[in-house]
Amino acid sequence: MSRLRKSRVRLRWGAAVLALALVAAACGDDRDDEEAAPETTAAADDGATETTAAPEGDDGATETTEAPEAEGEMFGDIAWPCGPNDGLELTDSDVGVTADTIKIGSGDDRGFATAPGLNKEQGDAMEAFVAKCNELGGINGRQIELTLYDAAITNVVNVVTQACQDGEFMLVGEGFSLDSLQEEVRLGCGLAAVPAWSVSAAFAHAPLMIQPVPNPADRTPMTMADQLSQLYPDRIASAATVYANYAATIETKDKVLASYPEYGFNFLTNLEYNINGEDDWTPFVLQLKEAGAQIVYFTGSCLPNYQAFMQAARVNELDIITFSDTNFYTGNCAEANADGAMDGLHVRSAFIPFEEADAVPAVGQYLELLEGTGGETGILGMQTTSAFLLWATAAKDCGADLTRDCILETIAGYDEWTGGGMHAPTNPASNEPPDCGMLIQLVGTEYSRIAPEEPGTFDCDPAHNAVVQTTWVDQAQLDENRISQLFIAALQEG
Image (cartoon, rainbow, N blue to C red; front, side, top):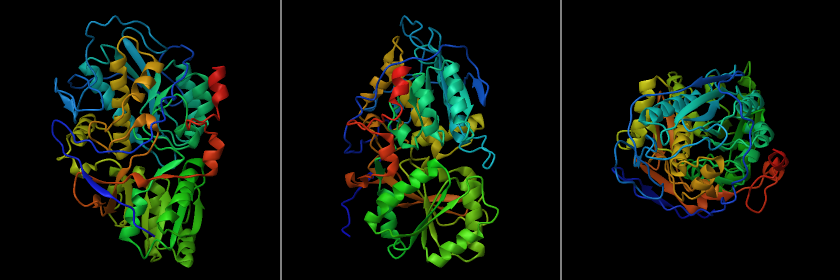
């Protein structure tokens, strides 16, 4: 197998950040559409809690293509897009928008009984950043009214239905594991979204949606596959997957199976576990041992399932390297590894790790703000932060004419976005994953980068953006612009 050409890119921090070149096809100009939603009052039941906000502040705004002139307090290398009204004549410009307020919804799966607090760092980030933004003056003087929805994984249809009934302007910074189930309802009420992340092909390619770090179903970043193949060339021929029995993890597992063999991975077995947990993980460990697996892709959540699996592996002396996705980088996961059972976990990331916060202002500011509000932290929390800042930047640029269409069209005009320097550059409207990434490892109760080794750097290569084809992509019914047509009738009827 020939080794792909790679480049090492270092992010340099200060008042500005050096741009990383991304080769990404721009095809997101058609990700706009109509609006429509029932206009009702605020608040929420069905797992929703309403908050308004206010800590400390700064102001100013900038386009994402170049570093701004500092007008006040900065978030990383961008000026905060929040501030008072500067002479605009504000009106009730869209559903959930008045001259004084903007209603947005967000949320996570924190109420999932098997893993209490699942992805709670997302909602915590939204509360902290909305509070900060409101203290700065809101968006052009409009105060943000935030409602957090708890989908608890299986309740996603109900909470999105509630968001429609609540008359939310948009969903911002949310991440729901079963996001495919929400789509008919979301599109039916014209509820646009700037989510933290996507899982399903139906949502990753949906109309009325742009995300800051795209995760399309028909493309996948291969940086981790390349890095692992170089670090563990003798193990990748004996690989396996362990995945939960629900759509979100099955889709991600299928993307790995469709793409990693290009880098020499040979998958010997694929084991499905119960999303609600297993009474005994020993049978899984013994099957992997019998198959001769030496490196395992585990998808789901770190706690409690992955931890229980690895504790069983340790008891049964199964020597494996494991790898997984961004959601496995959390403080709770690290703290739970006091016994070292999860040592050797490798996590892919396009975000600068917290351990380098002193060198990267945006990461340090994220941690400081969450510490001040008592919120939990994780890379998914930084993804939510990036989504909120992307939405807020576009909302400021829309000025008095704040509409869903304007938000999506404005974001489509930003050709580079880094969330203030928290992550590798992306082109959100292109719906292409970043070409740059790094590999992080858990040892004891601490994470550390292992590839590339130099702090503040990413491995970058346009060839790391691989095209994949799975049944999930087929089912999403993508058009020539890679927009899902699966629920287009609901959008048209709405």
